[in-house]
Length: 248
Image (cartoon, rainbow, N blue to C red; front, top):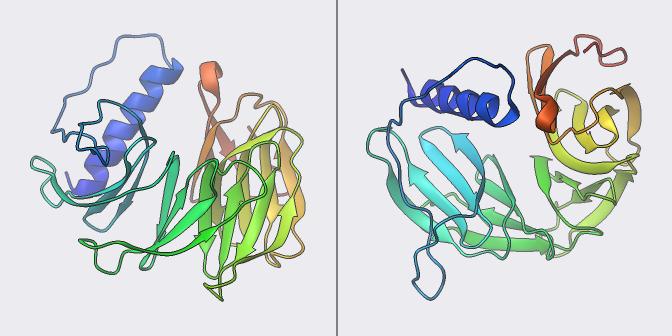
């Protein structure tokens, strides 16, 4: 099993167990583990891992207390820490090209140069309107789920002066995001799965919605399906082959 396959397998097992998707007993084999990051004081963090992002053979780990860890997982049985980037209350990570985007809840989004994974360097911090939770990016635009402030879009083409260029006020609390083609998929707590047309990021338009998903937390789109974590209700699989008419 390759690195991506192994990590996806573990992710799905954890998701199924946490959300009670099925009733029968299930088990997973631990392939390997690595300790979370350390505080600036050097104290080992015992918890706080929020999210993961896999790109090539590198795994980017967001930790709410310790910031971002970059791990080399070429050998899944022996992961190695490459570096750590300090960030305050890091909730989510998205990596595109040589940039990592870190949502830091209260302080906004750090854009970090990871062209040298052993020495990540901050490019700029985007000051967001609300608490920054989830991020996706399509350079030069960064899409941020900001809970009660909905989804906002920031242009970082001028790193010295990032600016807000658009947004969409969701009916609930915007948490999870994924991007596919010209569409942004929003897991909106209390608002359902919302599909937005982002062909023009300055003029975002809603094209579809599934209201029945009432506890949407995260969303992942693969091919013509959106996989939505719906809290205690489990995993919802939505047919988005026609984004204007999603079918749960």
